[in-house]
Image (cartoon, rainbow, N blue to C red):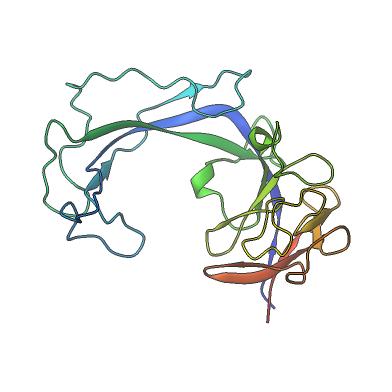
Length: 218
C-alpha cells in the first residue's frame, strides 16, 4: 500500500507575482495553440518567472492583495507564446499573476521551508479560512481544510461530494473529519450521506486519509 504522510502548511501573508500574456479562448477554437499538450494550455500563453513578492494586507481574507503596478511598456512582459511561435498582439490579454506563499508549519521560523501553493507536494494540508465566513463548506468544528493529493488534485475535505445523496442538506458532511491537523482521520462516522466509505476519488487517485496518512486504495 502506498502511503503519504500529511503535514500542515500555513500562509506566510506574502504573495509572489509574475507577468502573464495570453489569448482568450473562444468557442470557435481559432485561438487554439498548436503546441499544447498534457499539462499545457490549449490557447496561446506565456508567463515570466517571479518579478517580486509583496506582503499581503493582514486584514484581507483573500490572497494577493498588493500587486505591483507594471507599465504596458515594461520590457518584462512576454512577447511570444511559451508553446509555439505565436507573437502576442498589443490587444492580447495581460495579467499580473499573483500566488500565495506558504510554509511548512513544522519548519523552524528562522529557516522556514516555503513554497508556492501550486508547488505544495502530496500530503500538504492547509486551512481555507477564506471559505469559513458565511460558508457551508466547513466541518462540524467550523473549519475548512484542503489536502493536496498524490495526483496533484486538491481535495476540499469539508465540501459536498459530487455524488452526494443529500445535496443541499447542511446538517450532514459527506466526509466526516476527526482529530487535529495533520493527524486527521476521515470517515463516515457521524451525520453523513449514503455515498462512499470515506474515501476520496480524483482523476488520478483513489484513497483514504487515515490518522494523518494518505493511503492509496488497493
